[in-house]
Image 1 (cartoon, rainbow, N blue to C red):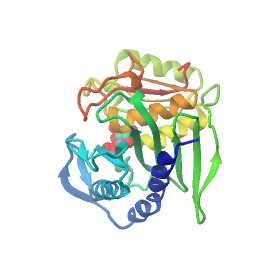
Image 2: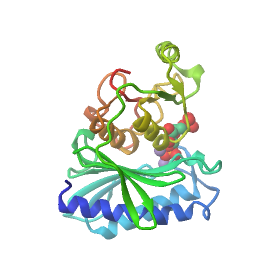
Image 3: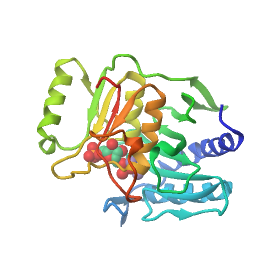
Image 4: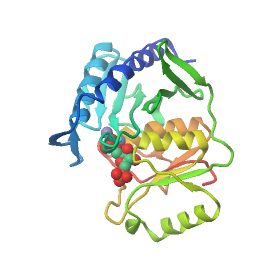
Length: 275
Ligand code: AHG
Ligand code: MN
Ligand code: MN
């Protein structure tokens, strides 16, 4: 149900999954540089950013690119149709321990930065035991498994289960607000099981599959939380709404936030509506 341009762009992005995955074993260690958020970059963070930038430029379909690893929006091709946001490598602290990582993309027709509600597509690649691609173009959420024959449909029109099973919450517990503490005590009493993996893509994907809630809340040490509105919260919020769920910064829907800067962070609560 995607229009031709959109389908072409998503297919081109899907072809990047294997080359990205192939680098995980080869490009190891720290890059000795920091990104605009003051976070230490891995060799892979920088490589994935350059690789995606170059490949998206080569599509000649992307006018503007926003990346977690860049301080400003980059102009790629005047007059092209789409703007794209990327978290080139999400969950980089999981590289050393060989746990889940992902790549997250948001696609717009508008110029960046703009409200998440303006997204026309969102997708992520999850590099687990199987590489998967999950996308929405605003007509449901669909999941594909990477195989020797390319991506094969695993499930069309994924919806969150009516009652969720899991919760995962980031940040040091001592930095949570009293409200957050209470909420988690309540989740425990209600029988929600803790699962936190340290990669947003992985933690989001398990929320989508089993239902429940993922949060990276405001912390006393980080009042804006940790996750980035444009590169992380917005694409996953588009996907969760399409799967029958909801996301919030604790005050308003994530997708309604009007960004004040490209590199804005936001507290994030995402998952089943009742939670
Ligand atoms: P990134 O690797 O793109 O910088 O993102 C890291 C994020 C996200 O993937 C995860 O939810 C969170 O940081 C984990 O943070 P903690 O290490 O505080 O658990
Ligand atoms: Mn990330
Ligand atoms: Mn990242």
